[in-house]
Image 1 (tube, rainbow, N blue to C red):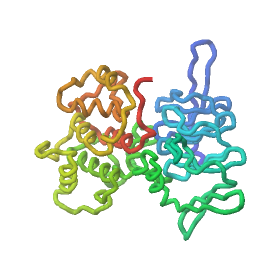
Image 2: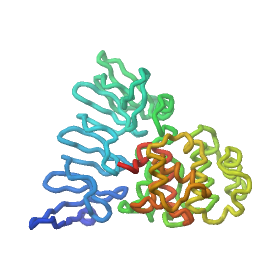
Image 3: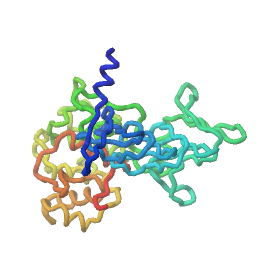
Image 4: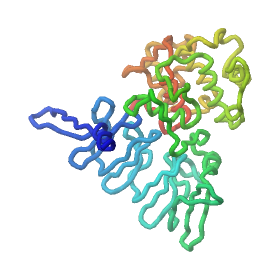
Length: 375
């Protein structure tokens, strides 16, 4: 009885009036990361928190979003989309099975292999998404020495066994973007104050999964609480350390005050200059957060994907030459900042919530979530 009630609670029928005399009815299932599966007459897509269809009802089937990815079936072929509906993996496979780290076991016809949600250059200098080419007779998840492993079977019966914990390092050596911030399958938070319908649940999931942010205690995230300077520096030090592969983010820090080692790290790495902040306990502004994040080695390493000239013209509440302008423009051009409205406004002197900080951190860490502003 309890299960039936729960299913009823997450199953909603929405009737939207079309422009003409007919009406369209579609069914919306439970929300995950701000989007819900939606179905009408056997066609599936996704609806946003207001119940509006934002990814067209065109698929035979879909699965719920998890860490910013959802598998879809388009006319019998499987692919993976991100929350704006763009394909991370084109729908051209007969089988797609997630194994974590942005990787999927893939089958097309007789061939099996492993594909990545992010393209990279192979040894021949060609752009590809095939981490293991689709030339194997089989691929599956198994074990090796008691550890979860990827098992690839060749035509002749020989096996290639790769423990899953080795995959992030392998992806780093192959030059796959974001591999310093691997997506660990099944590691999603269940904070009491973050619901699947919330716009920021995606960013909280990714920031938590990649180890950049954590809860605030008692199973809470406090998405609306404003970020302090100290918290921003801790996040910046954590991201920088993970990107560079040093041990700051893996070391237990017990100094007083709690943020002193993050401050020292940021000073030593050039993220922070001496005297830049006098009070680490106050709220940080959006302008200041952009300056801090843009000074990390991670942010400096990113290429632009949006025209800087168009960004400067579009972001009207930040003026060239004023403090932090270059940092703000740079994060827009790299697909990290998207503004607070359709006009790309930045509101540089406003405070930053933990939800907003999670969005920035998630896009810095994960290339597949960065945004093309000008279509």
